[in-house]
Length: 503
Image: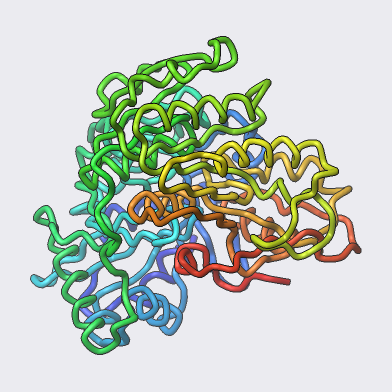
């Protein structure tokens, strides 16, 4: 049987580049097992039969081990991709990089890189809008296979690699890909590490410390050259001011944990309050406190542990609390009493209701909608605060590969209008905006955080389904654009901007 996957890759290799033998054998294993799909003249290879993976996927678990797709675009498309990535059209870049896989639903990529000694390495290019991991992924083909066997949902997230798969008891449970593991162990007579960091030393885009990673040093060099020729080009180190000395986070979950990690990595001392501790919390360098806010009497004394902390952040979902406005009022009162200097409150674009219209920060809330009225009452407690700096961030619908609304939407797709606009916000974009806000207190601000431009529901979920290897929902026809939420302010434009997928 012809190995089409391998032929596609060999046709676009850079001069002097070699496909690692282990990758060749992996491609043959994929072909022999029929784990591939042909779309628009390109073959995509997988580690698990895609229909079986799709059928197994629920809100809480799925089969298939690590999700990754293997493919090879044309050389021209490869060159365009790396040119956009590095902000520089340079033979030095295109002659040394060959993309061969998609490592995450955010658009992160695995590539072959030709090092200064003429050796072929496997490297990772984070999307920037999601994963920011840019580093050598494996020194050789065997280590790459061993990394895939460990069983992470995706291998693009640097925060996950120091931890075992399925460490988050509340996250999606990924069942191991046992046939793939058995094949790797038996074929190569090797062992499988428990943690990704036994193979990968993660580095983030823009980090000046390479951690001895030659690919990172090379990437930083070509980006510096790009910025000489084109100051707006290439991935750039974070230029935001330093974060506050300390932050207190109310709600240590979907948004709170990655935000805490980002703040801590930048030298901020973090304290947080969550409902209960889990085994994942034991070794975190974060001051954690526990309280069930639906069972604990609401008073500002509940937050006395945060006395003297300058920045307070509230990330609680309104739906989880019986009297959400009263809880936010107690949080605000405590912030005033214990010396907070900056409040950051994550609200929701739900304040605008569901009527078809275009909304920005000057648009009136829909006070006839019960949910909107509840959200607005919580916001008003923040507005009435005497704290010197306050930020109310109205978030769009949150999503990422770990907790994607696609499965829920698919169940109701038949009654949803495909032409209506979506108002979404990737979790990593939300974290970046929150981090930037914490770094830049400035009076009293209200901002909408929604990705732009606004794709239609049909085009958004079709693109997301393709990334995740899931069936495309079939939406009802007709309907207008529905509610579209925009912002009048440009502070987060770089964070919120998407490729134009509207339609």
